[in-house]
Image (tube, rainbow, N blue to C red; front, side, top):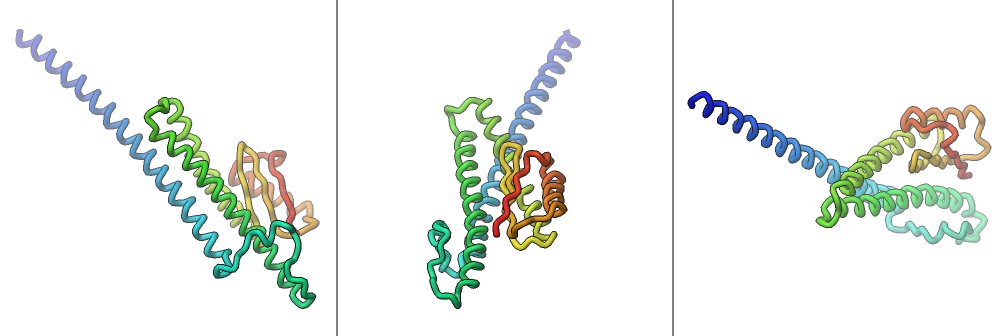
Length: 202
């Protein structure tokens, strides 16, 4: 009788231990996911705010003035200055648009992860997409830094669905410059050259 009781107690303890480990693992996993979500949202929000501050020209930044592609100031003496401002505005607006699009996507995905109606599979997919977006944001930042280090004045990178679009300042890029950009994208994001589009912004 004592042996049977000892075995039952041992089995009960083992079952409780396994259950506790399972609960602990699930809680730890969820905590890691939540931390990743919060960090990603903070990162994107910070990027939007930082880009707005850096490129807002002390409140004088007006995105509408760059949409038509025409100079608002017709003075010949200010043509060069206006052209530079227009180019700066294009890249600034592109960065802000990208950050806002990412923030909206993350907000939708975050709402799925906390929804009571969403299935576990839907939540898993949402977590995966959020992690993917966070990785894309990091790759884009790294690529932009490295491309600028090669001598390009401005650069904006957009990565989506295994493809990359790289917008760089300049025109008539040399074959060697195109190769350098594609090599950087491949090394940072593992995107093959045929899936990389380089756009020149004069």
